[in-house]
Length: 245
Image 1: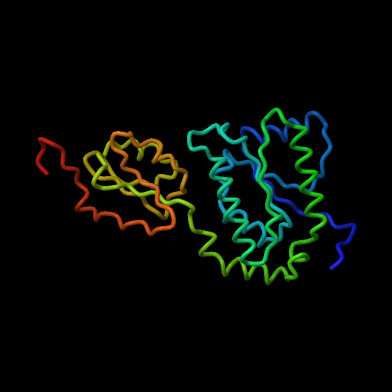
Image 2 (image 1 turned 180 degrees about the horizontal axis):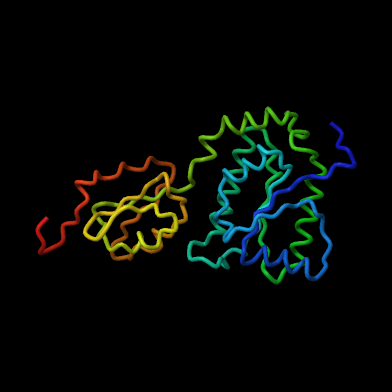
């Protein structure tokens, strides 16, 4: 199908608050010219971008999705969210290929707060690339309804977390450090009570694994395996040395 020269793509952009969003702001203040096709959503970290967000954008008709984060090893959080964003993007591109979407419609780039000109160049390049592909479905030979149906059919894979977290009941000392640090309120427990992670609430941010004291190492990262079931509440009491159970 021939792409109309008048076609203007709709691009959804997820920009890290600390670097890429600031770079976009600098581009505007400095009057660097770039296409206005991108619609920006500011996120605190590129690692917060979930595959569900990416595929929801395509299901709603976005022609391209852009993710902008801090340069690798320069993340503002101990979780190194930009590495998580990179892995998420690789996985999403693989899923896109499986369901018949051109994976080049998704792009991730690193832009620092001082790189306004780089932001303008990257967005210009990506917009040109999407213009050449044409509207969503053109290069793929699919209707919007078919694309939405394919995305819904792959929902189980899209919603699957890259890495799950599990608290080893044999190592947990109920210190409550991970519980206090969890931003999603996904950890259940109390003092003298083994902690468990509510997998339905867990966002996979890895903060619990980072926070758990190394002398305990109770939080385990589980990839491509089922998470063991949590202990029942009546079995979660921590038996400490010198204390009755």
